[in-house]
Length: 592
Ligand code: ADP
Image 1 (tube, helix red, strand yellow):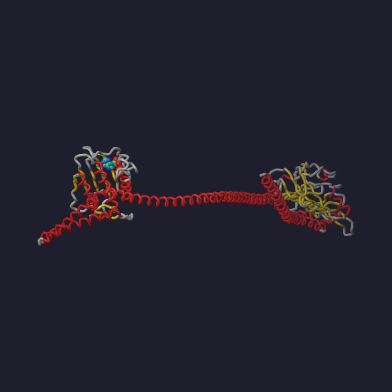
Image 2 (spheres, protein in one colour; image 1 turned 180 degrees about the vertical axis):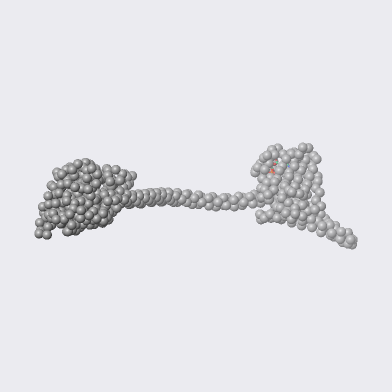
């Protein structure tokens, strides 16, 4: 942060220095151009002034040779003729005044009313004493008229100076031509008096302390001091700072040009404010551009830094994320492996359970077979004995040659053999281990098969059976052998419950519909604990009793459940118990 602040500060300092350099360069180069233009303009103005005055100078020289004047000054001519010449010349050239003065300074002839003795006038010294052309600037204290006087000596034919011609030209008339110029132009004499300028407020102002001799020349004229000027140099050029009213520049380039011909110095003040403004604008533009570039650079740098920080943060976050993903993946793989293991264990347990269940079913069946064995042997014994007696009787009838009776006996034998065959078939089917598939089973057939096996026992025990086989097959989804086992169990339990009671009525009912219902009801002792009867090894039967294993109902429960059905046991209101098996109907049947 500190480095950034320091760098910004350094940049600003450098920028301001650079802008200052630009300002300086722009200002000085513009100043040089200004100086060149100003000098040219000043030369032009000076040239014009000098040129205009030059003609008055030449007029003085020409008139000095005029015969009317030379004769008059030599004492031979006449004043009127000379004055006519002077007046004509003054009129034609716009001269203020033309005088012809004698060797002693006496005005001999004049274009105007001027008369008198000018002896001792400083401007007469050069022509009268030295025989040379004299130039003299003056101000009339009464009229305020500024003039330049050119004094040309007049020589006698023999040689010596006999007088002089003075041509006085008015300066104001000349300067009127360049009064509107933008540049301030002033012409000062050797005393520093401003005699001509295109700014009236500068006229008659004297720069510095009045020098001796000024009084002698400008007698009676009140000079004003020149405005305060602070002069200094920039790039070798003189600049003036002054406070002299709204028509003069506050800061100006001061140019000078000596004009020896008219004994004046041309001076120009060129306003440098436009140059200053231009330089300031250029510096400002550079400053603004620099600031904009700096701001842009700062913004870009900020953005870059923010981007770098974000990237760094993202990279860091990525690392954390990757680490987390790795950890999570590890955890998930471990969980996955554990799950797989669990699934495998479950599968094994399920297989073991299934096997145990199958074993149990088989055991149950075998136990039921055991239960039935006495009855079955009785069941088979009875027809066997009947067969043997029918056979003996048949043989006797044949011996007595009563074949029709013998045939009748043989028919009964065959009927009994058929019945025995059915019982054995049912037993074999019952003992068979059925695979776990579920298919449509006719429940009427199931009941019939079981009844066939239990018929003997029921008869022996005097059980009355109420069973009306349904007119239409009642088909449910299940396994035939396993359902036989369930029904066999229910019938066996019912017969057991009715032992020693009266009446002994076993009612079996079959109701088609959804679900298909099979009811086995008895008039027995009723169920002691209806909510426990399906528990494995729950039995109220005596130990050692041929039945009492306590597995019959729990196996039946498992079988019915495996078909998606329900088995329930409850006591009947009039005494005895009723068991209901509900099974899903066969789809085709239900659809039909
Ligand atoms: P087990 O017949 O070997 O006892 P079960 O599981 O077949 O085993 O029957 C369990 C018990 O349910 C029986 O001991 C008996 O108490 C009761 N039970 C079953 N059927 C009947 C029934 N029809 N009437 C009265 N109680 C019954």
